[in-house]
Image (cartoon, rainbow, N blue to C red):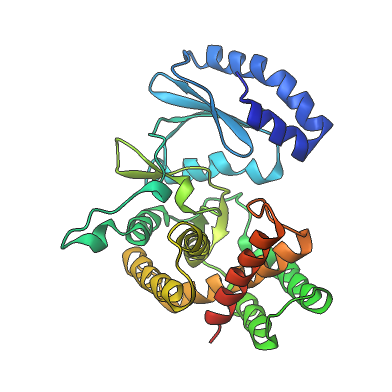
Length: 314
């Protein structure tokens, strides 16, 4: 039942612990299906850290035990189906959930129909409307994004000093200012934490529903920035946009997202600038990127991220 690509990626990432978990996964999934009275109804799918087993009217999701997955069911519970899939059952010790079933089509694959009301079908507008629904008061127990402020500040200073990069000092200073101005004190709102187009799926109950949250407390403009960072990559690689054309399109999508979500556009810009600088340093420190299969592609990726970080700096 375990897709070969998922098994290989898990072992490559987690080593012996991943192999041991994979060995137990079929029996664990079988026990959960029996306990929750479910019958398989389709081929097993997977994300980066978990498998998804289709059952009648729902899906069973079992993830590799990891700190980043702990609060996923808490976020679903807080939303209660508002803009996200319903959570039917959970077993936190097994990192398992029974969730509302959706279609496999993601927002990343959505092609808006050209109409006089085209703006309503724009990806950023769709995502902004969805994020507006996800902005609910945070329950107790979720980790705060603000707790990462000090480590982010230290990492930015260390990376700027140690790495070979082309970012002007003003760009790094702006990112540090965002940490001090926006990160240290944030609203008490549930954050998705990984709000990008592939984590927004077509559904029947609502047109689009969010999946795979990390479950934080913080500023919704951070989720908007994650979406726009990913959109910049897709617009560049998928649509071939570069230079001013890319920046103009991203500016339009930022404005559309902000209007739909009811958020301040400049606040989103500032968060996006910080994330772009962090990405520019992160790719360099890791020595690559999972999408960069060769050095030429890595250079193009770094050029894109650097260009974005500079352009978003006031």
